[in-house]
Amino acid sequence: MSELAQKIIGFDVWHLEVPVTSRRDHGIGSIEGGFEVVVLRLTTEDGTQGWGEAACWSVFTGSPEASLAALDRYIRPLVEQRPVGARAEIMAQARYVVAHATEAKAALESALLDLEGKLTGVPVHALLGGKVRDRAPLSVSIANPDFDQDIALMERIRDEGVRLVKLKTGFKDHAFDVLRCEHIRAHFPEFGLRLDYNQGLPTAEAEASVLDLAAFAPDFIEQPVRAYEFDCMAALRKICPVPLLADESVFGPEDMHRAAREGIADGVSIKVMKSGGLTRAQETARLAVQAGWTAYGGDMHETGLAHLAGAHLMAATPEITLGCEFYHATYYVREDLLAQPFPVKDGHVVVPDAPGLGLDPDPEKITKFDKARA
Ligand SMILES: [Mg+2]
Image (tube, rainbow, N blue to C red; front, side, top):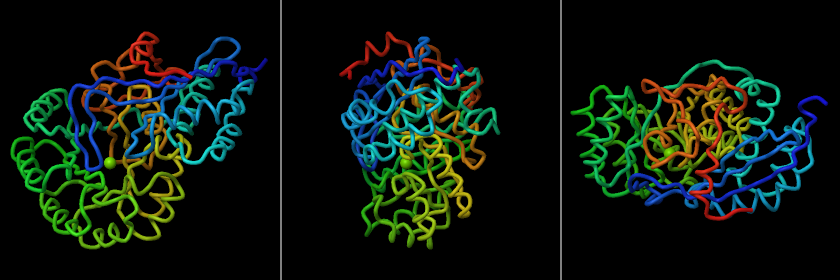
């Protein structure tokens, strides 16, 4: 039997809460204590396991309860007893069997690619078209309402070779944003600075606040206003002297078409979780670059398992040139889900070359973080 004829006979889903080291505030909401993810494990007839993570955030992409139900109730029947080689067909069916639920579909594609890679002895990036880079610059997000703690974090990551930070703005007041930009520029001159409002600016204040912070010459300013405010984004783009980045406004290729047509930004944050999988994330990045935009490797609140999907995406997608933010496993969770550390070296994410995703979750961590199982 060819490897890809193996049937998928196991479909297990867990809803986990992963403890974190600090509170973090964003324009649309906060994380405190832990964040919630849904993990999928597929098992074939010979016992090979493929893993995927749905990294959900209820205020951004959707709830973990919705991801769990999407996988357990609607996607499970598309997968059980199907051969691993039916990946493309399964993904095409999953797209329409349940609306939205992009994180669940991302977990599914990750697990199918992990299985296919393990069974055929190739890394996931080879299944996505081949590797164009071995590593990608890592950006760490600064979002602690206690800025002294973030200063300590910046000193640590500077020592470890990180040279990009993304400051989360728009969750307290403009004076706090200015103060932190001033401090970072004065005391951390070696860092590239990016700003992310996470939709936090009221429309009426957007122009003044964005222009004020643009004076700190960030590489880009991300999603200043609500996801649906395309007209406001387009107006800001016309007056902003630094690039604007769309995040919540652009989930997948369909949004990207409209966003490019309406000229709402200069770049886009590509996320496996928003796109509904790795191949659709690649499609979004290609459309962005064809429209003259740049692309960034974004993420949600994720464990190292979802970071692995992102790392393989970065490896096989030359269009994503602004680095990536897969830092949670290294610099935010109390304990990661993976059995071995997510690979970060000298301020870069290192792309794994082992078959499949390259690393597996630790079953004991799943038991430890478990909230509910389907
Ligand atoms: Mg963002």
